[in-house]
Image 1 (cartoon, rainbow, N blue to C red):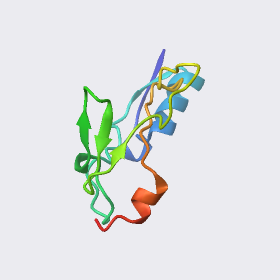
Image 2 (cartoon, helix red, strand yellow; image 1 turned 120 degrees about the vertical axis):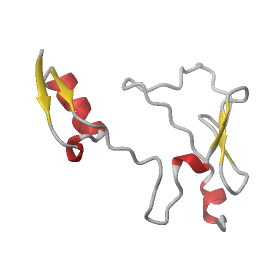
Image 3 (tube, rainbow, N blue to C red; image 1 turned 30 degrees about the vertical axis):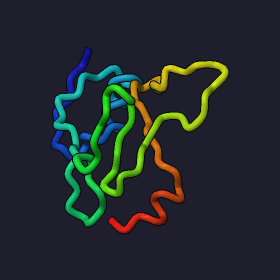
Length: 98
């Protein structure tokens, strides 16, 4: 496998996935960390994860879950890229004062 070194500007998930899966190149690139935001939006660290209940809670006390209803066909909740998505109700976010 070839290697590529670059600065963190290339460390987005899309770029890293493309390098590894499409080009078969092992990237030696720092990953862009957007966990702590400085642009006035909510940071990842502002959400609290409950492992037993498998959900996140936001600053406004609302739950972010993977699924809002029981599915006939159970899903793993993990995308082909190994990502789990947790979502809140749109109405919860629109009414949030935080």
